[in-house]
Length: 84
Image (cartoon, rainbow, N blue to C red):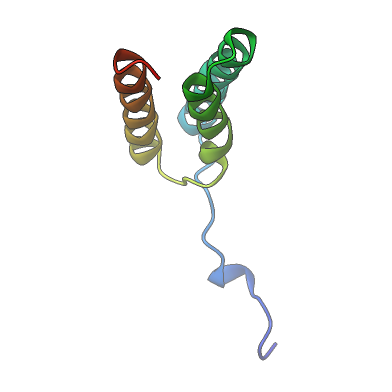
């Protein structure tokens, strides 16, 4: 089919058990951060939680998924240490 989208042109996500469990765990940590931030009225945990909930849907690689999670949590730690 000319000009259309073919299945071979779409980048697919790895659906192995490790990726699914990692995205579930990261999403749960994100939900905990978001809930904590909402209850405390603090923006930094809410934003970090929202990012942790959403981004695993868009990252196809397990190592990259874990690296982004660590970076977001490190940024949250730094923001809290600075008083945000």
